Length: 163
Image (tube, rainbow, N blue to C red; front, side, top):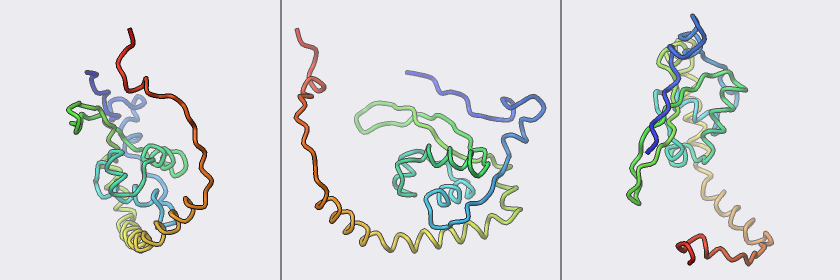
């Protein structure tokens, strides 16, 4: 079993700048009804998100891409921690958990992020009201889409080694 990598923290930052690097806040996205905005609002609310959390809570399978976008485009320092997770098939898997440093959250809230988070929650709730319509549109698109059938023998992926 592999051991978790250490979390980014003040001690690992540039010499004499660790706390400033960890606690850096960024810009708030202008659109409120996006996955990016929801993920940031959740992080600003103190949540620690894994990829599976993001599927159920923010309707995205791309949490790492969202975190990268928040860092590169909006200037946020998103911390990560690896943690063990028990799996339904009996394994222990290591997953990445994304979070913001408490100082960054405090600074952002002091700068008015609380009102922004409220607007994001409202906008995402309104978007979710269109879920049934989106499912119907996706079903129509899938029915109209030409599918390709590949006949590749992949049985060896599920069988043991051959003699």
